[in-house]
Image (tube, one colour):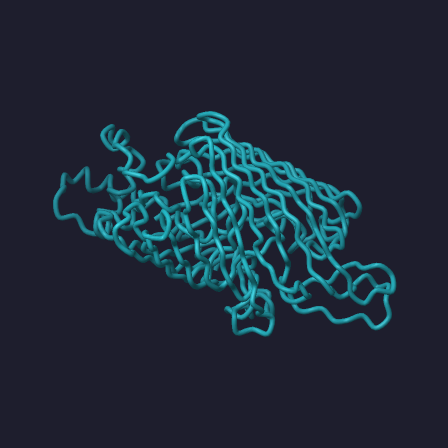
Amino acid sequence: MRFVAYSLFTLALTVPAQLYSQVQSSGQQPDRNFFQRLGDAYWQDWHPSPAAASAPAPARRGYPAPLDSPPFPSSDYSVGGTPVIGAPDTQTYSLMQAINQNRSRIKVYGWLNGGFNVSTSNKGDGANAPAAYYYSPNRITADQAVLYIERLPDTVQTDHVDWGFRVAQLYGQDYRFTTAKGILSQQLLARNHQNGYDPVMVYVDLYIPKVAKGMNIRMGRYISLPDIEAQLAPNNYTYSHSLLYGVDPYTQTGIIASIKLSDHWLVQAGLSAGNDVAPWTKDAKPTLTACVNYTWHKGGDALYTCANSVNDGKYAYNNVQGYYETWYHRINATWHTDTETWFMYERQVPNIGGNVANPLPTETGANGAFCSAGERTCFAPEVAVVNYLEHEFSAHRYLSIRNEFLDDIKGQRTGFATKYSEHLVSYGMWIGSTVLFRPEVRLEHSYDLAAYDLGTKHTQFIVAGDLTYHF
């Protein structure tokens, strides 16, 4: 399967340019077939005309977008659970250009993403953990092949109700980080397959413009709201993820309403079945989400405050209670910084420290905690902070610097009760807006226990990189 994935990856990189060259040399301009139109789309993306590069931006309601995309993953700061209310859909895709010149509101697109890592850890599967997503050392990996089918609601207009939807399907190694219990989860929890399939997002959006300055209601399975990072490769600054994000909830299934009160204020409230669990599993329980986003400096600064999952907090599959604060700050035209801090916990977590008689069993895929001697269960908290410093060299080049600290106080998130630090430097290089290469170097350390290389090393150094090819 890995060979097949990379054969397709290589074919996808070479076919469009070859087709375009053949069409040009033959002088056949009209009546191109699908593959010729696809080749044209890539050629035009990699060699844009001056008119295309200088085209005016579509109308937008509210503050101007603070960032450029590309090179960055998005032109707006990350706010989960909703499209950016007041922002137009400006995305075009090579596949849709070949199908209908990007004229339809329903779009089909995706990407192939693969990478490599060379690590000082060497003890086999999982030895890079808790580093994510390249949890296994010294590999070339087919990380994710993703297909989207979506329609974005028009949130710029204010005169009629509109709707949207998204079906996002993922195949590859990264499924192990997106899996929700009860949704094809036997691939991971029962069989621990190296690669797997996950319908990571399946939801509908209902946009109602007459509520304040616009309200969006999202229903289905969606990405957990807070975080600078996200599961899907193009939504991140870097190939790898922070330690913080690697132990975070990933998806929720439920309903979330986002209301834009003004250009400054956005409020969100929702109800889900919990973190990374389907509503029909025994671990599901009513879970509240509440967030507030405050934007100022004409869109250059934003504070995003979230209580992401609020219920009784008792031990179950990923039933962590999470409270987040994220600050986005545009320093100037080429520099910006994002900082996220969180506090998470679970109650009544079984003691796996080997210091108690008759220990309670743990659930498959849900770690226990290293409690004090004699405790059968305990309160298991963790705190973390991560900072991204980003510099734009051009529309096709950017620099990422990441620093973070994580304290897994009872070892319930990583399997080791220790403090961690992580430091990363990454460089992003685009070809047009369809091919992205991100090399990086990463140094991390666990302070109280040896947590790396399957619990034998305190320090880990990794050189890695990935290639994302959009269609």
